[in-house]
Image (cartoon, rainbow, N blue to C red):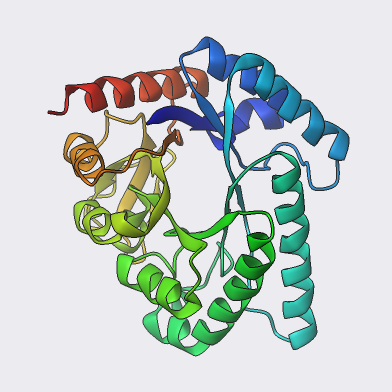
Amino acid sequence: MKVGLSTYSLVRELRAETMTVLDVIDWIAENGGEHMEIVPYGFSVVDNVELADKIKEKAASTGIDLSAYSMPANFIQETEEAFREEVERIKQHVDIANRLGIKILRHDVTAFTLQPEEMTIHFFEEHYSKMVQGSQLIADYAAQYGMTTTIENHGFNVQTSDRVQRVIHGVNRENFKTTLDVGNFLCIDEDPLVGVKKNLKFAATVHLKDFYVRPYYENPGDGVWFRTVNENYLRGAIVGHGDLNIREILRLVKHSGYDGYLTVEFEGMEDCKVGSKIGMDNVRRLWNEIQ
């Protein structure tokens, strides 16, 4: 088991240009992390091979594994031509992930921002075949590199454990699994303990995040809150500080026999470096306390 960080945790620094992705690698190594997941926000590698090579070199020199590559994608396109263009675009990211030596790639299957009617089971069923077809094409392409592609419980449609499983079974590829995000089940109001228990056996990698949760009838006021599918309130928290039962989640993960990467994702209001460091420290401490 290795604890590390998603670059998205430090996206404020990346977008403000107070850190580069190469700085992030150094920061992770200096703060006890063992791996880094690439989420290309605040920088891009798919169109910058030189940067990709520098990332790989920097990671090797600091002893940081490049654990995964996560990217947005949307197979729900209006035309067949647009669908094919999206597939080809994702393949370019698969190529660059392979150049980086990364063996796990997560792609979405729908847009992240959706209208309420697009969050429903009816929308899921209507577009299910495209989600499966697109995922098959990417998984088959990535297989040449020995790469596992994944769907995450991410966004606001393919979010519940059952919908994720349905796509996995529909794709029916040995190298297509899930990036299991322990917190994102809340975006569609599924109990994280239920989602984790159901989907652990399909996990290629695990994201650890935390949220503060308030019911729809208790407006918490100002802050970086967002709404779930059923209008409850969520706000990112330092892992171990929020309302998720992180201790029991980690116990479930450890007792399942999972021994892969644990990736901290910090999305809270606190300073992102502080939140990321405390989150990684908490995950390691709590993991080691589990009997």
